[in-house]
Length: 384
Image (cartoon, rainbow, N blue to C red; front, side):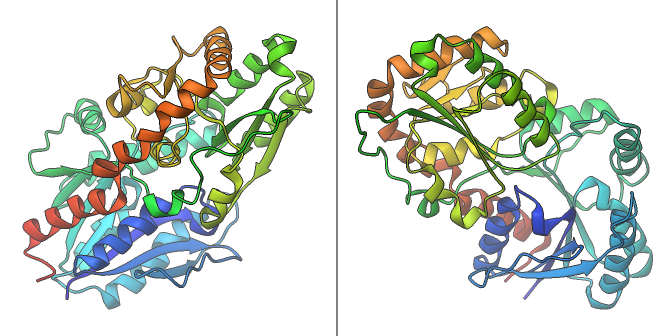
């Protein structure tokens, strides 16, 4: 049986969007691979006994910018002892450092999986990371991988344009959703007369995701709307405290509900009273080339969604009656969209009943994971 060693350079125990790796790792196991997921931790570890893949944690010095450097050294030393020539090493661009030095020591297959372009490049440290873990890997180590995958065709084209590389042998596998997991969310809840219209955002709380624009929009709503709306934010991130201060300054504390980080396994129970989801990603290159995982999870819940008209959203659910499209990513665009969703909630809720069936055929994790598994089998005649 061919082993896959999948490297993750993040603090996996508190990584909000860890689900992609967990779900696809399990699909690869079902397809005949033995999957070892390699990641770092400081003090905590994420465990889930139902997972088929093995999660192997590596200690790293979590001081300043040393985390990823010490993590890569520890992973490299371990892999040099464990990996075999027929095995497959799956890496992100930043982990190409490990792949390069590992290939100097031992023969193995390297698969480069690119899920995003750098986002939130604001501070000096961000720019250093951008140079070390994006620019240098593609400039110096582009010949190391034997195979490639991307989250969207647009992302592949973006990488090709930036680095003057042309990929001919690759696979596209998008984000997806575990339909059974989100089937636990009822299509609609029994509304009481005094129930508020619940809008929910799930995901990373960072500066350029448009959540601040939603808060400003909520503050501009007429009293008849604002008094009947609740905005629930599920997630953690570097911009969370700023968002809380902003909600206080805008006088939104009564309608805001910050849940913080919620484990993936527990998310459905927090969505039972949601009437409408929102994904306010602005028109920026990093979002246009993405495949936003939360949109798939929203769709699986069978509820209406407010979306910005970026390519990543349009490519998934264009011309669907349960989507409320903003005209753009300005505050007034969100004001109009929220008002429309509120005024037409019954029609939108009825239309959204078709959303789970629509998304299941193409974007279930089993479908997306099998795309990657089939490609690796073809490329390496593996897992036979």
